[in-house]
Length: 303
Ligand code: CIZ
Ligand code: SF4
Image (cartoon, rainbow, N blue to C red; front, side):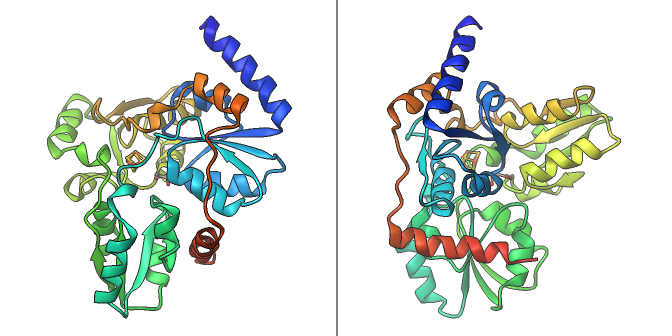
């Protein structure tokens, strides 16, 4: 605790010297969410990066999130605590594979989940998040959609659209681990709880949800609901905001395995170090960033 206090003071001092802000994803360790200027999902944080007057953004999340911030804030320096914090789901699709699929389906438009690298976004017609995926897909002026990379979210979206979806076989190792049996056991143990679930989970698990939504949507739902107890089917870091919003409510994570190891690579020590050394820095080549930005901006126009 003493060490954390010292680290937090050092970070506050360095933040002033560098004119930096700290952005933390909901899946980050509590110690990082505590010191963040903003907490949020990947898209909200990228927008905060674009809007801030700060010169330096410390992006605490995984690599594609830092890239999205850099794409929307190309003139700012975006640094990350640890460059090894990647997203295995984002890494499941590559440019060659996506181009091959586009050649096979020349009339299809590409919709990419925000959990993709800048290279993939640059090959994409329009991006989406888990919060707006259905609206985005339905807004596209083509009957055929190439969907990357999450097959679980793709399956969920396909239930709310008449479009033909060609779905990439990627998935989130963390959310995909949750099983029907896990949820049934938790329900038996907590019969008064509602099950709130992220659409990155398997279709048969998502089907069990009393509420299905993105991290932001789950947080809003639990805060506003009259229900006092929840079984949570998303990454465990979300507990920080859930408990902060509703200290009197109970939140049970559906298993103890809902932990993304990449998200947890970041810690206070590394935040302090990256502010000291201004490394590692996120770099996106200008031509890639310009194309990727278009696919993010098109998403913003969807009402
Ligand atoms: O876009 C994000 O931040 C992710 C990865 C999840 C969500 O539902 O917000
Ligand atoms: Fe990627 Fe899943 Fe981790 Fe999110 S929780 S960063 S989708 S591996």
